[in-house]
Length: 365
Ligand SMILES: *Cc1c(COP(=O)(O)O)cnc(C)c1O
Picture (cartoon, rainbow, N blue to C red):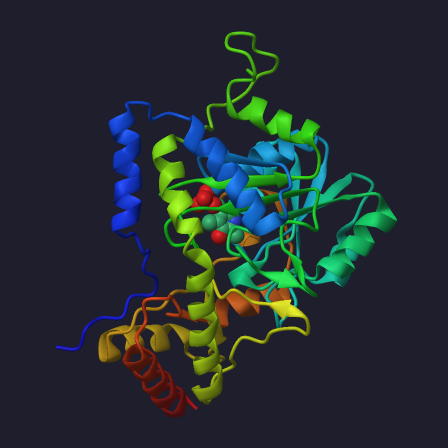
């Protein structure tokens, strides 16, 4: 029986287990010194030491980060519809309105012209997503933000270590979120990091994370409990020492697929972009769902469709987009398939993927 190749595979080793055990043995498991160390190390590793606050999920990070940046009722924030629902959910949870703009067909990220067209008097900010690990058009979006007096945020949930013209994602916007969910490029079990520019905003995120308290029982504002535990931080700290090697392996796997796949559209990378391949996403222009099924049933290869329903058409979010049509978003939702690209693939796995995709693409054309 051929072994099934999964679409994603979190890598948790002996050293992560030992780190967790160390925290458990200490008897102090809630937010403490491991979280503080993880924040410092993460900030040094990815964003040049900018103020960074750990929270218990990426979604909580976006929500609290937007609140700390002053987003609230009456505001609009421009987001892509072609993303995980957490992006627009976080905007809606602040009381602001998510406004959906279309994507570029090549990078699957926000189209700057569509963003420009969506700006109104109520627009407070732009929240691009570095989808699949490819950086969004930060230069063009930054110019629009500057010209219109808007904030630029980043959803870097899928993009640890991605960069544009040598500049790391997380250093373009005034607030960036990274997710640490198990299928992301690194994990803490669950978790998120919020990166901001100044200590005052970081302090507001910290207050919101902990019931509005800096000093115990002197609550300054109404906050959440979005604290990360030391157990999770201990996992994340170990993962941080491995993530660069994994990213290199993802990039090598992607190069092999780029060079060998035939008859499908492989993921384009714009000039100057460093893609970290959270997903390796191809387009199958006809019969995508049958393709996914055949990969699984005939070739024992897992794949994923991220995302089959655009946010502006979801039952939960369509209230913000009555009558909205986003042609490139809707086409991408029909055509995309993400193939396995994770670091535990062997050369034999990669070759099996190539044979399967090329055979199915030929049969379908
Ligand atoms: C995973 C993800 C999130 C949410 O992160 P969680 O840690 O799962 O809450 C937000 N945006 C995007 C694009 C994601 O992929």
